[in-house]
Length: 247
Ligand code: ADP
Ligand code: MG
Ligand code: MG
Image 1 (tube, helix red, strand yellow):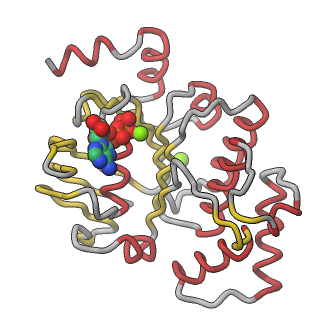
Image 2 (cartoon, rainbow, N blue to C red):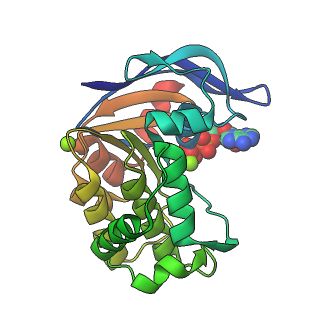
Image 3 (tube, protein in one colour):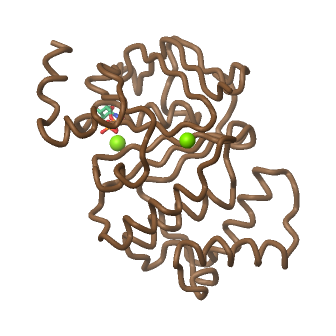
């Protein structure tokens, strides 16, 4: 079943054209990967679908579950089932992980979360991610390691249960254990009812996640789409061959 259908999407920031006409369809049950050199527009694409207001859609249509969502605000898109992890999560002293997630889930589902069932759900999700139970009562992101921040994003995703999730990996040097746990978390969450887009260069992560499609972004366009073999080719030969296709 089709979840996302993006037609000729053009996006600019402060009058600078960044995305130059992207077409992309994503069906439920699929995992897509975005690769491409820095500054190619991968994060911009995710932000534009999420509805971040600084990214100005100058042309094109975004259909989410057959509904045109170009004019929906970020919170409305979140309620529709779109999720984006934060590339640089901010520290929020005074708000615990548990309260943050409970508030977010209430906002996204429109249902007040009952204390004990929510605690149980959180505990179970944290257990799967091999997170220390104390973590729930720590302040959001304060003093978190890179691995903990990344796990926190996967935790957010599993608690909010979106239909379409963008995971913008910073490729911030996760150690092998963190890559294993994060990829397991992604695989646990993934089902025939949802779809995931992962922005990453880490071939180790991709080998564990087994994406259905890989798309190469260069200079605001998708210059090539393929399967996992495309990621392996890029790992071996870099982006040069794809850059030349643009010129
Ligand atoms: P990628 O994620 O592929 O590395 P980005 O989407 O972050 O690329 O950036 C694509 C281009 O858009 C870059 O030239 C970047 O400088 C520009 N850009 C992205 N976000 C902003 C912003 N908030 N303000 C100004 N320029 C931006
Ligand atoms: Mg699948
Ligand atoms: Mg990026």
